[in-house]
Structure formats: C-alpha cells, structure tokens
Amino acid sequence: MITSEPKIGEQVREVSLTEDAISVDLFDGRTITVPLAWYPRLLHATSEQRANWRIAGAGYVIHWPDIDEDLSTQGLLQGSPAPRGAAKAA
Image: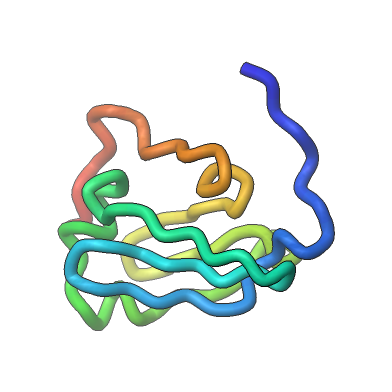
C-alpha cells in the first residue's frame, strides 16, 4: 500500500462524535466523517470514554486514553477502518 506523509493543514482542529459517527475537522477546512462501526473500541465505548480524547502525534493523531484507541488523520483520509478482529473496549 502506498502511503504519503501527512501534510500541514491535515492536523486535527476538532473532534465530534455521535452514537454512530465520528467527525474530525482539519485545519485545512476539511471535515472527515466516518461510521463508528469502523472502530469497534469507539463504537462500544461509553459516551464519557468517547468524550475523553486528546490530540497527539504533533496534531495528526486523536488518542482516547480510556480505551487505548488512536486514529490518525492519514488513516481517516485514506478511509482505513480498524483491522478485522479489533478488540472491544473493556
């Protein structure tokens, strides 16, 4: 698979979650929205766990410490769901 380096502007500005989707606003003005079904740990997390996120990785990664989940803007932009068999949150 060909990957490219993240670009300035593809950094996370804001994250919002609903019961079935995650939306990530980037500094370049784009918004990425994907189904939570792609990320079982987030799908099965509580609202409180989902709300406890941090920007990491120089601004290119969203980290949820309560469920040990990380999503990169690069993966989101490529439309990459979690690998099959990803563990559910405890």
